[in-house]
Amino acid sequence: MGLRRESLHGYLSLLPAFILLAVFIGYPTLNTFYHSFTEWDGVSSRFVGWDNFLRIIHSGDLLLMLRNNLIFLLSVPGILILSLIVSVLLFEEVPGWRFFRSVYYLPTILSSVVIGFLIKSMFASKGIVNSLLEDIGLGHLVVDWLNYVPTEFMILIFCFYWQTLGQGTLIFLSGMSTISGEIYEAVIMDGASFRQRLFKITIPLLYPTLFYFTCINVIYVFVGMFGLVYSITGGGPGYETTPIEFMIYLQAFQSGNMGYASALSLFLFVIVVLITWVQLKISDRVSN
Image 1: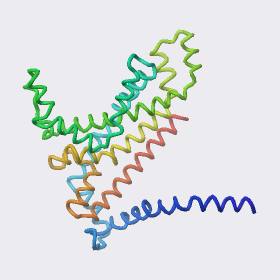
Image 2 (image 1 turned 30 degrees about the vertical axis):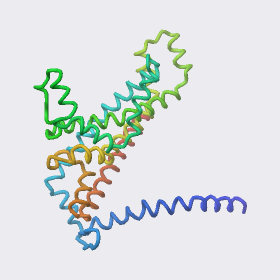
Image 3 (image 1 turned 180 degrees about the horizontal axis):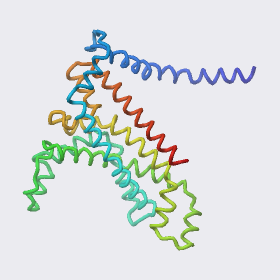
Image 4 (image 1 turned 180 degrees about the vertical axis):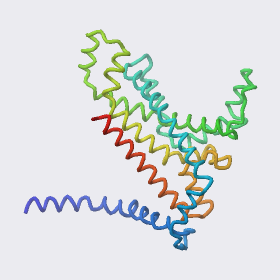
């Protein structure tokens, strides 16, 4: 009887959280799923079946959006390696490590929009970057950075790296702190070099941390680039830098095609679930 009462108290204590999840996550999710099969302008809706999904598949913009997401996806190994290098240097307490630890983490506390508008002002046609190039005699390198697709992607990825570096460094430093110092003392006494410690001890023992960081960033490039794209390129020129999540915004709040945007949201959800499933399968195989 006492155990049953304790279980009841436990469920009752969790009830407010379940209600909040149902209201703010469950209902919007079900609502989006339903309206993905409708032609909806936010007020009135009309059931159209699979028309929205067929429109997505046959749209000439689908491959372009997937290409844009793929470009961001291919940038994930870069931030993984960069964060690992910085965290190893800080862990080894190179000269000035306390100062650089703060510098690397500072962009993490800024919002994507703030970072985006800051970088956009720097790379504007009359911004500080072009002005600096002219001042040091490199005027031939001046480019209209924000109207040329390759440089737009370069700027977006640079912002992604800058914003994510502090987070990645913090995650890897946390992982390194769990490695027993006795292991390092033993291998140092055996004459192991820095390179041997890094590749034989640190990285293998950091595998769970590396996998976690990779997972969250792979998901992030599909669902977290909105702020940077919105503030820097606006998805342009045309849809050349528009990932799927930004197209959802354009269709829903600029074109008023809420049903089509709901279908895109469901389409994006399926992509993220499949990618996560593949990552977990890869992790299981490597672990075994």
